[in-house]
Image 1: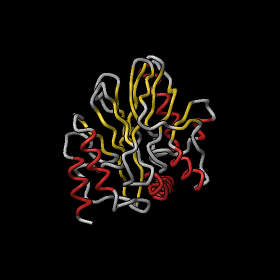
Image 2: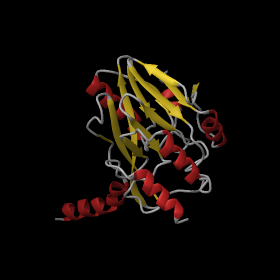
Image 3: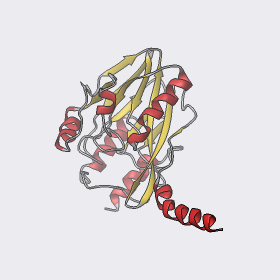
Image 4: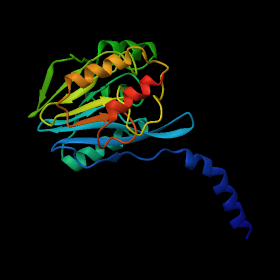
Length: 239
């Protein structure tokens, strides 16, 4: 009986640490052919949020767009991708400098995996004392890798001064990153590094330039369906 009581006390003491752990990543069914969304989770302001990121399977390997929110999941995501697709991760593109996007690029740099970020993103990472990318993103230039194609585009400031989007022309899918809020979002989220004044103009440019997109992926929360861009503008108009 005494042993049971001791075990109960230990489990009660450990429970806050268990509950504090975020959920493991989730790889969604393919959006189109070789394009996938994976979700990771992190805690902000005492609440758990999901982050949407993408990866593209090519004949030369897998290209990762943004990294898991938790560094502890970097290796396990790569292992899962290799097992699922029989291809290693060969490149990582960061859409801005925050932890749920660029994270800690030194992990990939040390493994010889090419990492990509814009000059502005690297400037911000350097200011924070974090690792920068080994390659510089050439915005507006098509990248063609192993039979697949994508373009990283800077449309203007918004969620951050360095936020970029990724266009997959073959699939007519735009990865909007944190520039785009989900239609289920109740607010703009973290705006400590945002340019709220310019954000609406950037969104209008996105609407115009990528009007042919059949899916625009927001950075957080529910990504399926449409209305994400319109809802982002609604939230901005309330500011």
